[in-house]
Length: 132
Image 1: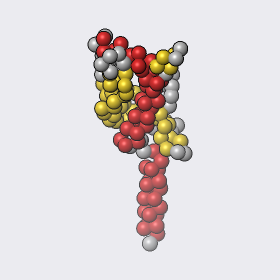
Image 2 (image 1 turned 90 degrees about the horizontal axis):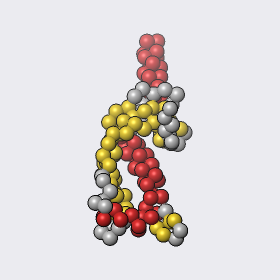
Image 3 (image 1 turned 60 degrees about the vertical axis):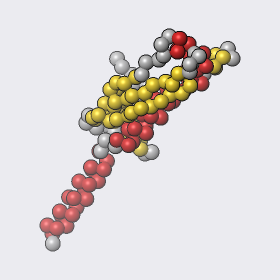
Image 4 (image 1 turned 135 degrees about the vertical axis):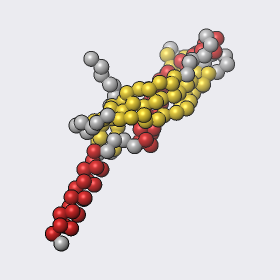
């Protein structure tokens, strides 16, 4: 009886610790990075300068996110974890804009290191990532 109680307590503690230290899920990473990319690129599409919309001048209609995929994550330290994420996105170009005349804006497909922090609301990407 005593052994089964100790085993039960051990299993409960292990489950609790596993839940606290897990890295962000694939779905969490996809949602967070998609939102981050949209926030970072929306000024390029929607910004107005001297009454002129930059997206219209550049010939950019919208952002198209083709793929966001978590590749791997490092160890968690101080509720933070660094994950390598494949990001694949492009701007959809108008036919009559500056970007079309210059051959379009190239598609972006690369693996990026993002640092995530665990908050009460869940995982969040740390911005900006300050490099020394």
